[in-house]
Length: 166
Image 1 (cartoon, helix red, strand yellow):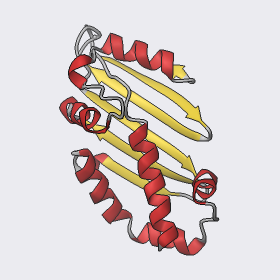
Image 2 (cartoon, one colour; image 1 turned 90 degrees about the vertical axis):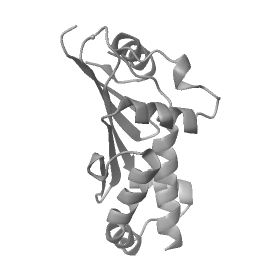
Image 3 (cartoon, one colour; image 1 turned 45 degrees about the vertical axis):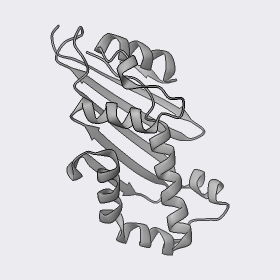
């Protein structure tokens, strides 16, 4: 159980730490998908806005965390027993993530495969993402000081995400 908690804590820390980016909007509906990978952790971010010159109205973030990365962090292999405990507690973990992020249960998806832990969160209300930024920013960055227009967010993501945007 201790290993399972350590693995969950690591996963939570990794995905919350990656949420400090900015987001944005366009004239006909605008959307883009951006990807990056750091030390084996991959992240895909989809942003949407009513138009390119409008504020982003939704963000979806997918994380894929290799089991080996978690094992390296905790210094031990994740056994089948630990994986079973995680699977058994998946619903509770989703509830905790939903409450922590301020988003609906159906907007959080977690899955543990044989080689990775997968986590998706959907922010259908951009104000909830702004609240998360205000709460978690280690550098004191405030959402009110950020440009959430689609163009600005896309430009920020293009310059910061190694896989680029399409």
